[in-house]
Image (cartoon, rainbow, N blue to C red; front, side, top):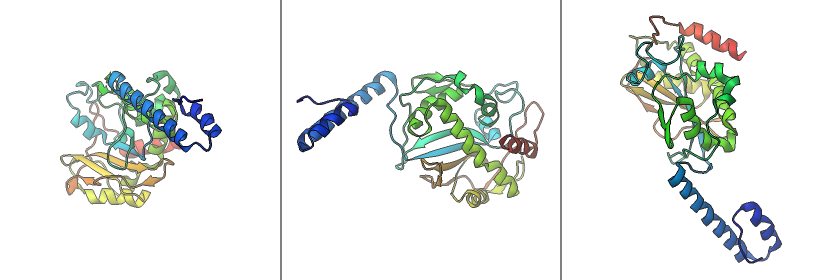
Length: 279
């Protein structure tokens, strides 16, 4: 058999049969790599996606709803402040779960099944409550503008399938991490609560989370309001340090309350409902 094989499962029997032929093995592997590189490049150019690749760790991105809506004020529904019906929680909600590289870059838009909302029917209540859609604008996702959840799956989730499996696995894994590492609860226990006037040292917010989870979070802000908290995990979902600067906020910051149609939901009430849903 003189010709080389494109796919690994084709090469393996061939290589085992020619155990003594090192050159043949190397030639086959080189040819296979060349073919796969060509296919990946063509998929990026033609379809806007890449094949699922290995990555180093996950970043769980949480957002403070009031700040998120302030940033997205031009794309939030003007009649209710933000898109969801009913009162969104005043605590942190999910923004995304990113697969990341240790060099500070990240994969995106990998090959995968298209977003299928029907597959999330069993998670719809939890998604609405904890992965709240706070922006009416369609997000640019790979090759076209897509709704928020579709964007998260197609841009980030498809690149994490080697660990989380399919679409439902991606969203379920993210929800489980969010509920296990309850940042809102940690801050309440540290006497750091939502307020439109009171400020807190940003270092105190980081320290409270660090003490609770034994890892240093990344904190980002919009002016003097907390915007995102990011926690990082290895591929077995054990906490690890994130890559890059941990604090991108001023010395003192606010956690503004989220007002919805002139109704403010207490953080404590929302937290209790969160705990009951987990139990």
